[in-house]
Length: 125
Image 1: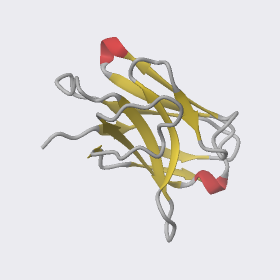
Image 2 (image 1 turned 180 degrees about the vertical axis):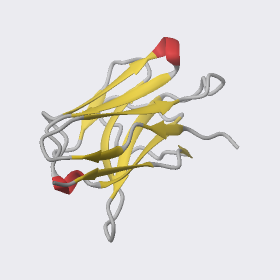
Image 3 (image 1 turned 45 degrees about the vertical axis):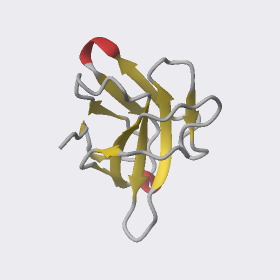
Image 4 (image 1 turned 90 degrees about the vertical axis):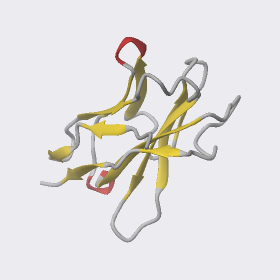
């Protein structure tokens, strides 16, 4: 079954940085949007950031603006989430997801059909 693969999670202290990677299989050429989501214990899953594969649209949740950056390396079929100034409330399992939907102004709320298994990010002193 088609699946995305996340990596790069870990345990960091508040204020530190992490870069998550999402490997997108090369044959998933019909994925138009890749998004990052997270789910903390006891909380609903929430969107963090997303981008269109054409690179013309990125969107960030308010909690991510100014600290997180989503980017892609087409040659490596990889989408990254650079997270800086991490806070304890960023602790969650982070998932990347893909969709063949199109987006013009917003991509976090689009229906995503392909998901990874997640990578744990823990921010604690």
